[in-house]
Image 1 (cartoon, rainbow, N blue to C red):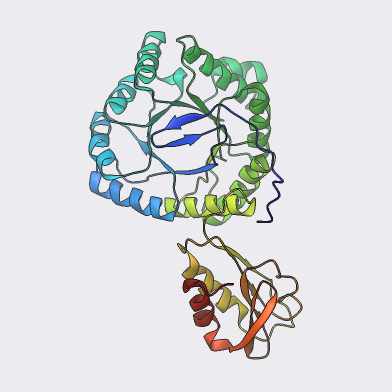
Image 2 (cartoon, one colour):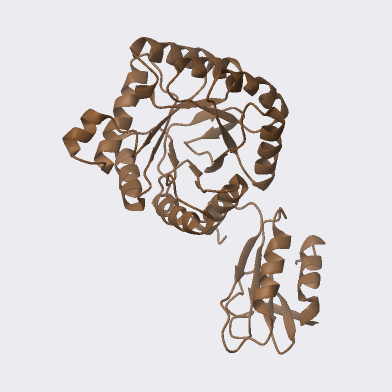
Length: 358
């Protein structure tokens, strides 16, 4: 990073979730959700550990019944990142999840019962200092609101979210996080923009039901990236149909692309063209895979030829530029030596892993 902050984040209320914070001056966090049966403690813990290793900051679990709520006790003892209990319909599941150690609960207050039940949940959350995420999506907007707007709109979703927050605020509760997602990227962006104007609570951003890894990552990068670039968003989830580890990887890359996360390798590579005389695709693919999990705050460049080599990639800490069956190793724009093409990945990794960057 060049030290210049191009993104002015909207300052929201700072809220503690387990051992981390969201909102205020806290960094944007990456969340995911397990797809294991929460009642299967072993499988759930194993998946959470994989997600944490990939860079997940907060994990959400589905709580469909009391057995799952009680399983939280064992799960919490085995993991170190904050755990969010995802509750629908039954307020008693929220109460039991908080007793079992949930660091946050996610509810839609309108679907867990009458005012007396909402009050029980809010009072326990307040007493235990547990934040509540109000989750509104395009399929959960109340019928009376939809009737007035005629269809799902950004305005309808925001009205639903603020009405739900007002229910909690009636009991003197203010540790609220909002999420307000649609599967439509334009509606999602418009809804978060409007909500950011009307509320100072932290915002969990994302595009719901985004799709498979390919299409879902693109939709999420556009939706989440657009909001973060405007300074909107305190925590995010990339919602994909597939392994949740891929959600975390995509989320971290979105933050890196916006220079909101300086953890790990920043990897750049040029598109191929007729000037390229090396197998750039193979080299770049292998290198990117091997660099996953390397916790060094450096920029690595893999360039196909001299045109895109040390000159255009001079801001990279280290990189290679293709020649005819060989590559040039460069550091901070300065050429160091030539390397045979077949040894390019091996020698570049050696330079990175053995701290040979100067």
